[in-house]
Image (spheres, rainbow, N blue to C red):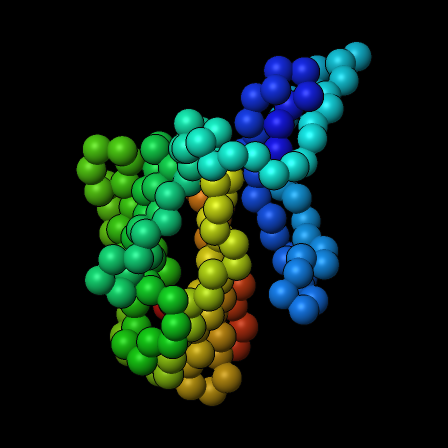
Length: 171
C-alpha cells in the first residue's frame, strides 16, 4: 500500500482473512494514518516490489524461540508461552521489558486446580501482534487473557476475563 501523495510505502496488516479456493475472498485492512482537520489522505493498495518492503522493516517482530513467543516493537518486548496446548501452568506474560533489558516477570499460583492452557495467535504482522491465552481449571473455572502489542507504542493492551472464581481463589 502506498500514500498517493508521497508515493511512500505504508505498512499494513490484514486480519479476519477469509479465503476461497486458495484465493483471498475478504479481509480487514489495518493501517495507521493521521488525518488533520480539513485534510485529505488517499492510499493505493497494490502489489509492489519486495525491494520497497525491505526498505521499510516491520515495526513489530514476532519470533518463536524455545517454545516461547518473543514480541518486540522496539519500545516494549514480551515473552509469552508458545502457541498450542500446555499442561504445565505458565503466566500469560513470562517476561516484559524495554529495548535494553527484561524489567519484570510474573507467576500464577499452581494450587488452584489447573487443567490446561491454550495459546492462540489472533494476528501477527507489521502493525500489531495479538494473542489469546485461555486457562481451564477444575470446577469449570476459566481465565482468558488477550494481549496486544502495537507498533510505536510504549505500552501493551492486556484484557482479561474470568468466570467461576471466588475472592478466596486468589488468582
